[in-house]
Amino acid sequence: MPSSSETPAMVVLFTDFGLEGPYSGQVEAVLLLQAPGVPIIRLFSDLPSHDIQAAAYLLPAYAAGFPPGTVFLCVVDPGVGGDRPGVVLEADGRWYVGADEGLFELLARRARTLTYWRLPPARGVSSSFHGRDVFAPVAARLARDGVPGGGAVVAQRSPRSGWPDELFQVVYIDHFGNAISGVRATALPADALLEINGHVLRAARTFSDVPGGEAFWYPNSSGLVEIAVNRGRASEVLGARTGLPITLHGPPG
Image: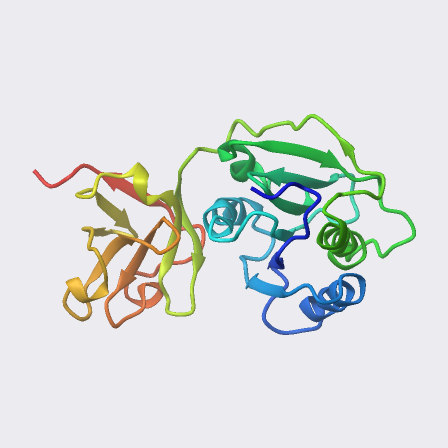
């Protein structure tokens, strides 16, 4: 595993900035200016707006596919400009930068190795765009130098005990209308039944294993339980939406 002094492979954006408007572009401009030559990947730009908990369950699942040394710039920050701390985490060899409002809870809980830094209070920058003015420069510094720097100090992290290990609700609706949950597929038996919005669903391996128009759940490519409709949209057929609860039933009798 690379040490923290080695140059990261890329900077990955994980934000609720949206697919339109200037915000992702403004952040990318800072990264390109301060860490030229480092690739920038938009992993998520359309996380549910202001929904820290939903993003917290997506982050460890989707970050796991990136190599050690990757820098994740993570911004779901409804408390921007307030007294929530800016932080840097090194978890299992990957770097994470953002505001500590719960976004890193599941990531930190599941990490085998973890170091947590707090950033100094932001001064002389916009009070409403710390993603650009505070966190992007820190991510660029990590990309250049492999260290947090900038006055960051190692600190003790305060866990959130109220969030479950598996979140039985929809945390994201993708482009195809599939409903991604906050549940790891390994936490369920393969023959479990899931209920969403009054619809009880069996598991399938993949889309082609069920008839067209049929709803099912399956382990998605990032290891989360996902609810889908073959050749249809779960968001329309099942009324799936972010925040909708999912109920676990036992296997059929």
